[in-house]
Length: 290
Image (cartoon, rainbow, N blue to C red; front, side, top):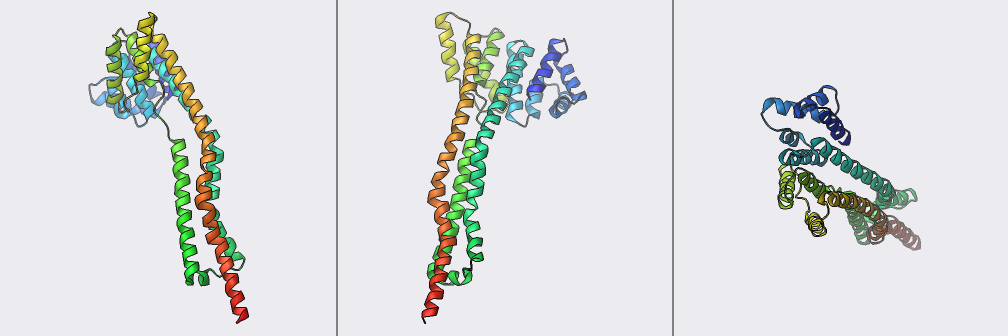
């Protein structure tokens, strides 16, 4: 996505019209979405941002469409706007890679440990436990059913923890970047904030949290400094904070996985592997005494 945005920025800065830039991107295979955008532009007389929003299937593409829409409406330099969103997308991708590397260990541990009770059943059978006989007794049936339920609960619990830790958040700093682009086009602060929200919603993105951006704009007005530079700095800081939070979430996941391990997986292993062995041993001992 970042490479697509930068390629379009280079072509626009070189003097190509937006439609010509999309045609060139489609002809030379810069990205498959360029073909869909060109087809939308050929079918209907609509703007490039609207065509891109129609063709977008990911939030990254919707972010590019939102930036394009803001630049179109505000009259801001489109090439600079695309380079800005390219930097944002690259930072987000690097944060995702960092989080993926940090989460690889806990994720592998969750997969391995969740199958521990099932492996315990095979171990018990290999050691000679009479699983059929155990299941026929009331105590054995309770142990096997309880163990199976705990195993399912533990797998669901660990999967939900991993899914929550790996869920991708909205683009950090996108609101600040959109407002900064609108301000570069000459809009007032309130109009820029309103345009940023409308563009994000019109492109299918969740409404951006502009609370921090509003505070930054107010600070710039009170201090008499350019709001664009403060917004850009704030967006970079938000992306750095998001990367740090992703690393922290990955580190915390390894600790959180210990809770379902202790409450569900290990008791399930005891019920499915140890209990059948003990019951089989007690049953054989009782038969020997009789």
